[in-house]
Structures are given as C-alpha cells and as structure tokens.
Length: 149
Image 1 (tube, rainbow, N blue to C red):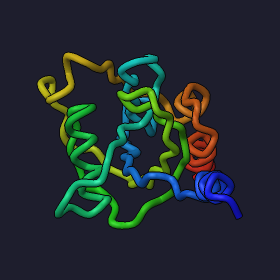
Image 2: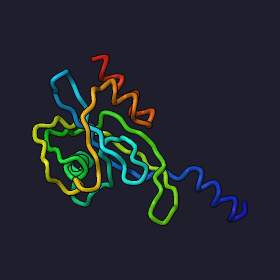
Image 3: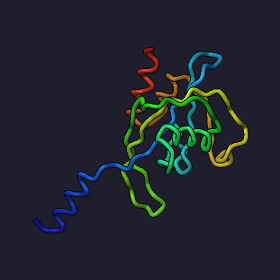
C-alpha cells in the first residue's frame, strides 16, 4: 500500500482524544437540577469538560473542571456514568475528535468567584430542560435516563 493510503486509513481509525466531564447535579426548589455552562466561542450549553491532568484521575480532573468552569464543588463518582464524542476545533483551526468520560458530581458548594466566572455563563436547569438544550445526543440520552429514575 502507498504511504498516502496508509495515512488515510490511520486517520480513519485514530482513536479520539480522551477528555473528562462533570455532570453537576443538585436538589433544587423544583426538583433535581443539572448545571450547564456556555462554551466560549459558540455560547452553546454544555456540561463542564476538559483535558486529563497529570497526577489526577479522570474523576478528579472532572471535579477540577467543574470548579474552574462553573464554580462548584462536591462529591464526584469514581466511575464514569457515560461518555460522549464531539469535534473540538483547536486554536490552530484543526478539528479533533474527543471522547469525554462523564462523572457524576453531587454539588454541595457554589461559589460566586471562580477561575472562569468572567468568561462563561452558568445556569441550573431541570434535567428535562437540560436534555432539550444540550446538543450532544449522548448527553441528551444520559439526561433522559436520569429523568426516568
């Protein structure tokens, strides 16, 4: 096979970059709620997510991302409760496929001052409303499954 063809095949089967995400939940006035943040560029509602961190488990990194992006702390699950794949556009303009492992975070502290408070909007939604507004189908399905419980 030619080197070009081998590179094309490698591009087709290259695994996605691993990321970590936090599904931040609380008991609100009207029932169970999920915290969403807006993306920096397109202002879409998503769950907090980011890259793995050296010396931290994916669950620990998810909790750190929840703090940095949404100003919340709480108890994070050790095991992922789901995952989703999306395309991230890097600063270079290059699109990369990312697979984010989702960790449940039961929120017990909400801060007004946190690292990305000046960059992002955050908002609590009912699980039903959050499932309607997030774009990632796998996150929608996860939220819908929480409604059934």
